[in-house]
Length: 406
Image (cartoon, rainbow, N blue to C red; front, side):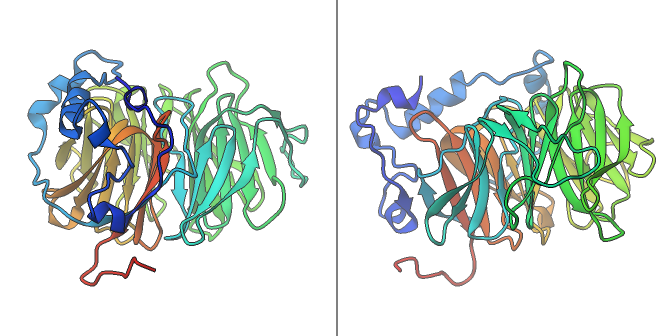
């Protein structure tokens, strides 16, 4: 049952924190005019939402290991919901399509466009349109000067002034936000199974900016963005859905179409240790900034937290309500970790207290991505829904409250 079919009136306004405090639904859903209450609809969703599994019953079988958590955490307060930007998803398993570069600036995929939204000015601007022909305006060795036509964006990464979009045919499009046009285009592979599943931008120990692309052809490729050159290419036994580099740049968490994850030496690509515990395929990973803890998200409806000092088993198994854990993010100060389900729920955990307490953010719609701002002040959530598609913003709760009446 889709919410859109329950709604007669199509015009739904944005919602502010002040309106939400007065009782307005954060997504603007007029429950008083619908034939079902919010509580009843939530129950229906919990009962009817079909989690996608590659390994049958993985979600049920993982439950016995899950940690009971206190859901009374209040770390981020609702700030605003804007329907001026509608984030979209092209591949149901890939949900890394929202990236924040400051507490006011967020980039997301909307159909064939990558758009920027400023919550300060409430303005939306198109950064890149890939519906037609996209070609680089700079010349670099190995760059495809002919570019691409009608790229379907599967994944996105934005950090500082660099934006990288990955596509269904192995495309990689690199754009600097402070330069006109596109700087570099390449295709990682010409194999049929070529989808770019994830991209991570990071600073190499040398100080150079690099990015790492995880691909369905079982490859992980590392590019030096200063020279736009492929610097490493590792091959694994299965399609790689996500990789995360440790803060010191030495270790790589690799997850994909296998219940077993890998912790790998980032210089050689050699496996240091397998990560055993998940029961299905994994699509998310992230490192805590302390470099000791990292997390993996799986279609068995769990996020596992690992400690590099003892990898024989995970230190915590955290459970989703509806489905797979498709996206994981830590705040830059290491205080919080967000894990996103495919729809309706984002869980924010207090990492400092053993992941025992969480804030459960509850709404309706598929989740295209989650992103903390680099200063930890904002949390953005992309919601994909025919009627209620939007961008949710939550702001970090402090001991003082901002005036939001301005």
